[in-house]
Amino acid sequence: MERRVRIDLAYDGTAYAGWQLQENAKTVQGIVEEALYRLQGDKPVRIRGAGRTDSGAHARGQVADASLSTRCHDDEIFRALSHMLPGDVRPVRVLTVPPAFHARHDATSKTYRYLLDTSAAGDPWWRRYALAFPHALDAAAVDAALAQLVGRRDFSGFTGSACTVPDRVRTVTDARRVAVGPGLTAFVFTADGFLTHMVRNLVGTLLLVGRGKIAPSSIAEILESRDRRRAGPTAPARGLCLTSVVYDEALGGASGDPLALW
Image 1: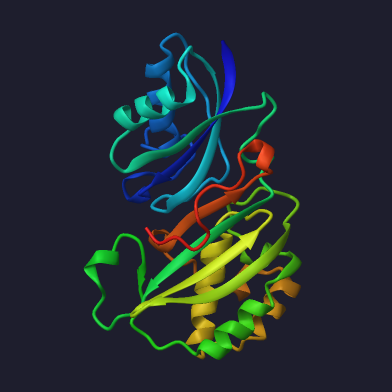
Image 2 (image 1 turned 90 degrees about the horizontal axis):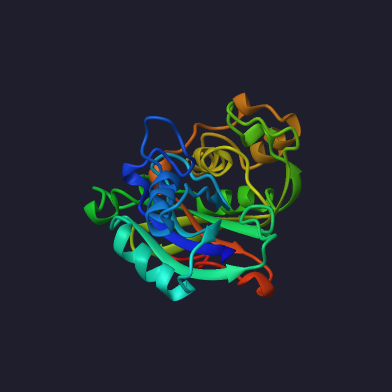
């Protein structure tokens, strides 16, 4: 009865040390694996996620896969997870997929959204999901900087020191600023993959551009230099959300909504 299942998830990452399993820390992966072990009952379950979200970051369209030995149908697994998982980690869909499915390797693109609360005093409704940033942004300068990110680039200048991936070339297909509503601005990035802290480092640099601290052309210079020291600070994790992961239709299609708010 063993089969591979795809599990789409949404979570508030505030209380978690990120997605990836860690010793002596509560992670989203650990919580889901524990629930699946209770469901299966005979052996531990290891899951693979599409993206390793940071400590305190969120997801609306995370995708995981696992090999399960159970007679439960997909809808029964969904109901069981809905019951066993905590309120800040929610299953969105459970789908049996081909045995070779891999949540990370089979993804064709991912979208992250970073949310800014630009209201003067900060809106308490968004304090867990947005960076309070009560400053005027030069929209034209930010848009000019964002335009330089689209294409196939080496993003070494925007990755964190913890990044161990030797190939740091990624293809960004969308990088834009979205006025979500009064006092809310989002940066949306879609790419074939992302490096450690890449989005948060991009946002920290874009905020410097928006306040006139550096020129929009600095983006191209940082990309060319591949020097992280020339980029801006790492933006806090709470504004970051993995909103969607795209797969071929035969594997269940896309998860989430690229422009979704929490």
